[in-house]
Length: 174
Image: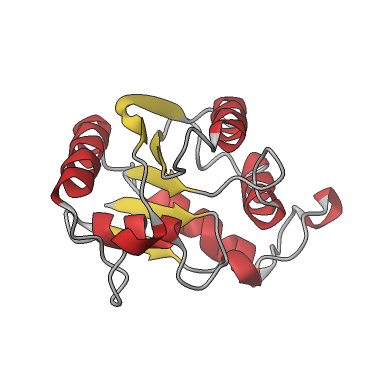
């Protein structure tokens, strides 16, 4: 199972649409608790964890692989998404986990978020999968009213990234 994690809180987010479309291709689940995570505080990174953090870590631990899609904000990751990543540092659930990301920014944008995400994932020990870390420009109008993208070229690129990620995924030891 691939865990889909969106770095955007925006209603109608293209990043969320990409991940929603990804869910139609494979066995996946979406982490929808980004807004529920408390501000990271190292003093709180101990048992008992805040419930939203415990849920995030449990979902990561149960996943075979992770797929992220996040917008860029002010040249880097949005604060709420960086907060999510900060909560993963102390748990170790991401260590050795295959990971990919889809950068949907159009017009050559999004490189700051992509570079920052790659750096944080390296730090927490995720394994970036070649072919699953991709730039697939998606204009806002590509998402239908149901939040699913129907454009064949975008779906093909997304399918290829998912295939690469699924090929690297191994079920977690339980």
